[in-house]
Image 1 (cartoon, rainbow, N blue to C red):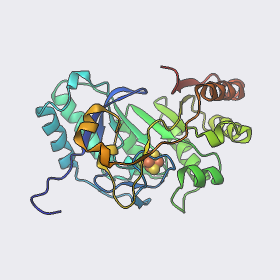
Image 2: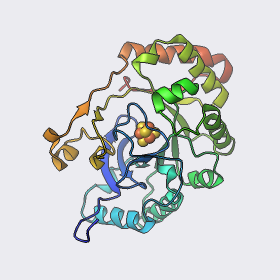
Image 3: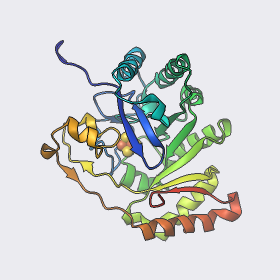
Length: 293
Ligand code: SF4
């Protein structure tokens, strides 16, 4: 990067989400999309750096100075934020300093006498690391992606980094669940190919029972996927359908792939099916359904 170039901010949004309200985004990963998955539906496009390596991708001080600058420039109205969410250009827990960033944001909020909850969207592939578990203590809400129920769906849906296995991911979630408590939820992306597959749905119900997490999100890829080759469009962090993000880029030059989604009927069928399978074993699920507004 030349000295004259201005680096992109590590703060984005706010994004208005059907799940969490008005959310300010924190990106601890930075300009190269980096994740241990390369999900077939990822709104970032094709992941550039598929890795399990945990390291410092962006300095903590830069994230905090970007947050302060955005606040000073009134890029967001702080009293209108419902939540601050760590996600960004990939898997946020791959950032070795994501806990430190969360700690510094809490201090920044405290100095302003504010108490805005912190959430993190994670694909649950780093939960074997005690440093990750300890850093997650700073978060009020932890959303764990769980689309796969076996090795086949892990490859097909998440296109996970080669060394990852579904058993390892589930073991990590169970480890977190044994330490952390009620602030966990499973975020499940249902694709039409699997939505009517009873064997897949049964395995999903068994997985929910095994993990013992009773709060789930039934989601479907309702954002188009950027058609990217080697190029990564940073604006696709958060929600590229907001008017603000459309104004930032020349959308006419961008190409997106519309992804097949499950229908409203499918989503409510899945909800009822999962409830009927798990109710007697772990009790009623608290379900956030993409089609229940
Ligand atoms: S886990 Fe998230 S960031 Fe990573 S590839 Fe999947 S959708 Fe994209």
